[in-house]
Image (cartoon, rainbow, N blue to C red; front, side, top):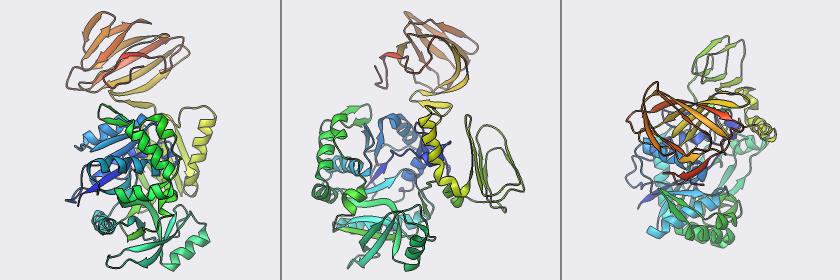
Length: 473
């Protein structure tokens, strides 16, 4: 019995701003372990002999981040499915189920979010085996987290009668939306409610049958999108027009709340969805004063506070119950009990037309990254890092010229009809309107400074003629 991990990797993680941004959200960050949350998610399935290569569903903008993070941990996915737009979890799981049943009609899917923390791997594996046994009988199984507090930030699942001949498996009584405090306390006291983890074990064919029964328009749109999909490098691009026809709906609303084949497996596995800075503080190891600190941090008479410093020293004095997060271009200071409302600030940034909700100062590209250093009315300065063996597209700009100064490594430059090789302390000039390409032919990262000058310096002033990453346009 092969279990196929299906990892949903489309979240934006707005409540962990300013560290999580839409172009580099929390699943790609190292928050609660030595690897990113996506890498941890895939890594914790290792050790189960029946686990197959993962199927990943992500949006188009994150495709190279996903591919690079998988490569870094030596994982070759079974498939990388690209959503042209977000449509919530039901269409995403449907795409994975349709893809899997092409090869294995009886495939079992272990559906996982890419941005959760699970600290007890042994208990997680035990729950997987129990859920697999239940799913193999045709039950659509979810994992219910045994609550240890009246949490108002999670939905709940009430268990029904136990399922005969299946260990620790219960019919689903009902789903409950995020409750207020009194209701959460009553559910905790009752002992038959669990936190809704958003993780599932499903036989792909059974899930598709139930989706057809309860939300056929989702299945029809996704099937059409997969049939019209196209291969792009290592990715499968779902057809945009067809996928857009699907309603945006969660797997709970589309299937799990309607099916008579639902089951819940109670589990205690050290689970958290890390949905806020306060939740991250809760799961981290703390000092004797209850503080969690990371980076260059100095404290005096500080209690029960989370402080993260990314680029400079952060000093705190005589405060408690705060979240302080410093990045290169933004600083967040909030009470821990207000941490769930960080999304309100992100909404303000969007409404004001700012970019800090979307981009970090360092922006990742499939060839490496660039970081803004300085900017003025008609100029800006960036630090570029080009990974070994990688190259930028053959391109030109209508509104800006560029100067490149190599700091370290070797640069191979196409400039018009010329091809030149630059090493440390050498430079070149790219006039406005001239086709050019930058490549790192070496075995160490290429570091260079780029000085742009012109009437318009936006990233959309790029005309691509050829690109190894298929971004021509």
